[in-house]
Image (cartoon, rainbow, N blue to C red; front, top):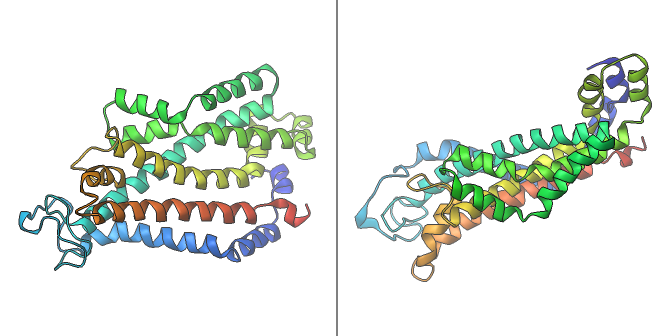
Length: 292
């Protein structure tokens, strides 16, 4: 971090106050705890279960939860639902996380350039963003998913390609408010390049809104993956995801409702938890509370 950035960046005292505000946000702490538990369960859980996600036991088809060794029951092929749920969680959470990283990278790059350069460059970039936002993203996602060979990597790219616009708008607005600050003017007077000022001086000072937007993007990406897979264009069986588990359960809602309730509950917990974390980070990183 350069001297100019060090002067403009939040002090350690401010960072500590932000951490304290986050710790006082009970729903954010609950969301963080749920995400940690869910992630640990998806990583460690499959190794602790007596069956793997692909083991077929036709004699145990449609076993309800808490039946024998099948803690959450079985599916129409007799596969252990708990094992499939945790393996699906690995895929759904990884897709959400990496889609967030990619969309945040694209959105931040576009937003920083548009906000700092302004003029026809900024206007052109933001009109492109407006054009993408004007087109219903779900139709674009489904069109791309149907045209490309479905795989976890491809679904991640498709979701990221339709999720970066909100990040770009947030970053562009934040950079526009920072580009006339004293530390930026000082950098120009020192002869620093525009690239240096954008990414070494301004970007560190806009990191708070980016973090909040990234957290909410994870929740949106998980929902989007579930939606695509539910419609049959996403992760394909036998590879499990929460979305295609719902797809396979829709015809058994009357006879075996747990097949839909359990993955639906996992999606709800994950998305709600990330939204709680995003709300807590937004309140914690609100610099107006520090009277700066």
